[in-house]
Length: 161
Image 1: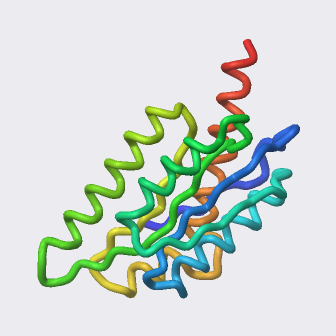
Image 2: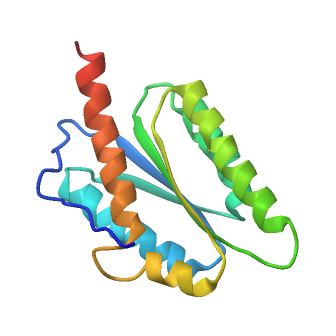
């Protein structure tokens, strides 16, 4: 079931920091579409410092997230957003890469206490990735941006109390 996200109530982030987007180099037509839709929504909410990094694959994204946050001694990174596509093949590669990528990102998020939004799409067919990255209101990049913005706003309210 496709669901679009309501952008009308999206909070504006005052004094926005940096959003880091980590992308797998595989299936760039889909990953770049996810990222482009995400950046549009981020800019609409006040983010202009958006860094994008292309990595060898989805398995490398957790290490890159850890490196970004380890180097962020001034806490300028508000959130990390991760994009990738992993297509089911004839081997266990799909399961292993999906589980390790997502599990690794969860560990990094908890260790550094910073939101990491994961839109690494484990799909059975390329057509499913195409649908989720299409140029419409159902693009998962939009959902990723909304989740990042909502988490940043929520955390700022919580931590400022």
